[in-house]
Amino acid sequence: MDAQVTRPRWIDTKINVQSLVSAAIGAAVMATAGWFALVGRVQALEQTDKEHERHFTNIETSIRQQRDDTTQKLNDIGGDVKDIRRYLMDNAAGARPDFKRWTK
Picture (cartoon, rainbow, N blue to C red):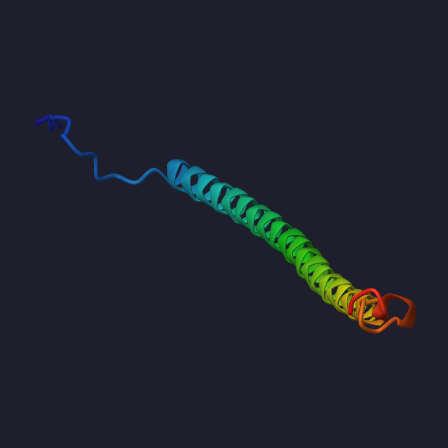
């Protein structure tokens, strides 16, 4: 009776079904966890993008309103300048009869 002596190999090429099944289950669990983590991060990025879009829309609206207000104020100032000019021209020394004789 010759007993075959098997010496251990450096790399074991035998496949254990239990190890294979547990590795497959572990890989599936890790892939599922990674998928849900990725979905969560994408949702967080989309939420942040919506908040930024809303923020910049508010900024653009504020800038537009400020521009309109500035234009209106400049028009009001222009009207006031015209009124002041007309007032000064009406009250100039040559335009008023009571001052006209003094300026001669």
